[in-house]
Length: 422
Image (cartoon, rainbow, N blue to C red; front, side, top):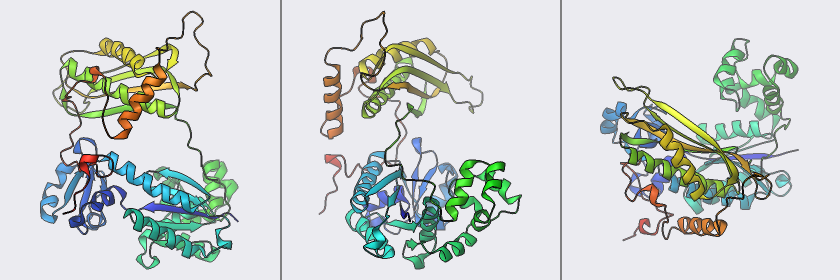
């Protein structure tokens, strides 16, 4: 029988912020979205106050003062590094691992029960992650991925479990399914759950008891697999190999409205550079490049303008210089003066592996001399944390950056931000 464990970090973004601030151990903490717009993560204390996800921060001014809520801007460098540390530990503990998101992963524990008790193993994993990283996790163990999700849900919801739930026993599975609303089942969205309730299927147990063929006929084969999974039949294997991206988009809303052409040009250049870096990380070349710019569609008494333009390259490339030349031309063609721009972005698509594409018969390969070596050196320097190499078109001191007034230090990825113990 298959055995899966879902390990999920508790309040991950907020936990990362608290990790290097012991003074905030029991304080209410929220993490804000890009440009400090709304709440995207909450600590346990904030959840207890009834504050919902996605609430605009300006609506919380009174609550922030009243309850002493500490706000942080999203620190992606910190979160990504702490996630990597957690996943490395989990990878050491299981023969196979699927990193499902930045704060959760599925472990394949098939056969582990022949060596040790699964509940004991789960507690050991939780203790190791907590000790080595300071991040607390919940662990749900079950014979299918869908049941492991529900076991993890129970591990977080019921303190008596010690944040670890073994759901291998069919009787325990049925008892938990009866307590879970159908909308809380992994893969059952709001619209599907409403349709299921209209047919008298209100709990996860009701869905498990439904006729799989009827579910497939009325809904989809995906929901039929969910029914099978709820009954302990594994239909979803681990996705150990991360699927190749079909497109790369680099886009941000600006910290303030942009009216100057040079400012917006620098933003496009920055996004192009970042997209090219991600493309090389995927070990791919791209053939299609798209640039888009737009004003806010919700701004009153302001003219609205949005435009985008794409081009197909004669030969695919991953060289930042090639892509900058293209996005510069595209930007000049869609730029219009007299507007207050709030967002821009670059998209790369139509990917190829190196050496597997048909070159344009009427054009020589446009790959610049020593392109691969140069781009590799640039990436190594920028990833080392010891320096930063950038292209002049990005600007020396950009004014268009995101609003991040509550940004914490990059404690684990930047030397000058290392915490000092006195």
